[in-house]
Image (cartoon, rainbow, N blue to C red; front, side):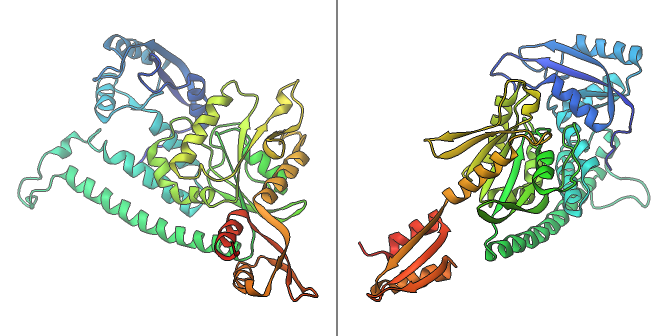
Length: 422
């Protein structure tokens, strides 16, 4: 149903510059990287400036004529718009250019389709593709608008287009059911880790920020890492030892991108659920990129969409080996809480500081202390046992319980507010 790129396909990129605040602005260099990641070759880039998109072609009719000439001159096989096109604009362009036209969303979906390896990843990509396709079914299928007719073909009145849309709806329902089952299995795994008191740390960040390289450096794993956008798609979990803290589970996730298609965010919600339920989020940033501040904003927007923006977060300023003046260091908030770590996953510089900062944050969000409870505070003692928060217990000469406790700070605040006598 879906046509993916083949290696070496010659592509032309169309990029339009709009005034600030009118249309979401994209980066033409990032679009080139996306096309490269999809396996195509950029042979030309057509740029223009407009106040607003043209309702028929997105670009003006004069630029369409220039595209026709460019197609002949450069033997172009596909046109890629670095913007989101409406189904009508896409149809009009293909009729005029007599060539396949895809937009930024379709390009990202194609890359995801190539990279998905696991059963869940393939289902999620197909779900996103079907949702995207459902609004564009008429493209290339205009004959399906007509009613079936003739001897042996008369039916209840459903057009072929309606039949296709119904079949897509049924397929979407089936995929959603399968993904719900996988999500329940993933939830059971999280519950098992919680029962064993193993915190999970999620790596997030803009695509190509170096998450997989950092994951490999911290876990001695061999996750695929390459200098291209969306090199990693399927999530990977590994156990890693953090000095001063019990073992933790480190999760490598799919990279984010500016204006990530909503169909993908919705389809990958079950995978991204891992991030929302993490004890800590390591936000990996390509410190050598000129766009690092905008990239941070884009990642924060996606985290907000999946309701993970409230999870404790540590910024990892990666790739300092590409910055001659940068030194490995930890930046603190209020003098005690780590907020940023400058390091390099490739060279290994500063990774010891990263482990130290992670340990500090995990301890910062936990209460580790000795607690003395009188005999009339048995209810609090029982609650602490229910949360498996007591590491050691003794009884002093006065009959008080002397407890060594270790539990999450928010749980402690809750128990103390209800069980500790005022």
